[in-house]
Length: 563
Image 1 (cartoon, rainbow, N blue to C red):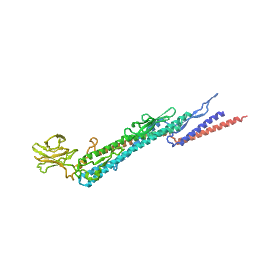
Image 2: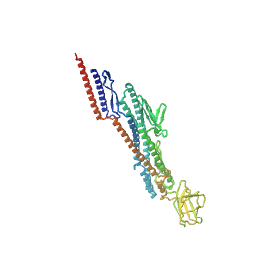
Image 3: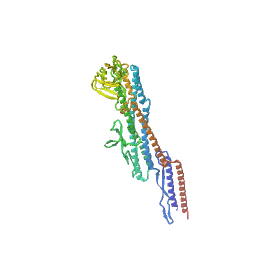
Image 4: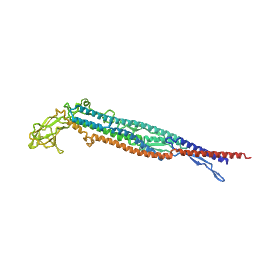
């Protein structure tokens, strides 16, 4: 009898000791990241058959388990991967948006100031002061382009550097998971019991991995994990690790791509394979925003330089010479974007080279007797500077004397080409010959003349500058549907809309992550009040077991003292 009570008491004492140890372990790890609370699982010992029936032999602790939900853990990992992706995307985009919309760094105010200076020159084309103001405004505008170009390059470099760092961290976490897999396999094979703390450490590493790249895990029969990313690409298989690396992308060597390293070399992975985590956010930001912004800035810079230079070349400077390039496009070696232009050094050095005037002058002869008037005329590329006098023959309403054919006559938007003299006269019609266009109105008399000649005294002529100023509102971009400012405004709006969309998604995903973490905390977190109650419970069990041993000892002594 005493021996039976004694053995039952010992088992109860051992169970209480394990309960106290487990509870103490929970309390000690209350603030340990990734820790899941543990509890002992007790089972009844095999009873002994007696004549009075089966007599119980106490209990034992069959295992110590962690309170854990793989379903909740998968929810947290998935939500964490999405949150980290959106955070990386948002961080880069927020900075870009701030720069694009800033009046001190964006293009909008600089474009407006530049064309304001163009209008000032058109108001006083002979003034060297207004010309200097124009050149200074142009320099300020090109500085904005160069600043944005530098920003784009810096962000490309930043993304490259961050991708390298993230890939290195992914490899580190993968190796740590493989190491823990090996330790778990050895521990379980040796004891048959779950090494709960190792499980927690591995799950925490998997969570940290999901901050970098979306990853899922499956459990093998030996307790190890297989970890996959993307559409099932293996990252860790038991104790074997797939090493990731970076390499210049085949599509654009200036961008770093992610590749799998093996014995035969490296294989670049499609960006679509990288889903979730900061790595995905960085690569998606680069492809969906940064590439778009770089392209649009490139187009604006190219369109501004090309169209302004083309019109400037059709003008005449203060020295009577044809206009040269006003802007020079530059593409520094190794840059990611061509959105960088400068003012031509010749114009910077001599503002007289600003071509404000038109190279030809169209006028009616001073000897005319009719009422016809003519516009001063404009020129197009390849114009002829040969002086010519056109004579009106009233009987047939015709003009003769053209030296360049065909002559295009445009009336109410309808253009007709003529290949020889005479050419019909219509009041209000626009005539184009040898690249020179002019509009004639009124009623000329027989013998009246229209004279096309070189603009030899065009110091105060502003015709070309007016045409340059009209480029501000001309739809020279997006297939003739948008102005420079409109395209830039659309670019700013695009980036801003992406930012707002990202913030909305981030808020929603953060809420999902928080909710999942709260569910995990409710299930697996350490509640100190509950653990305090458990301490008291196991203390009382320990004291009761000790009392049981005391009674068993006293009974045994009593038996020994029987004479």
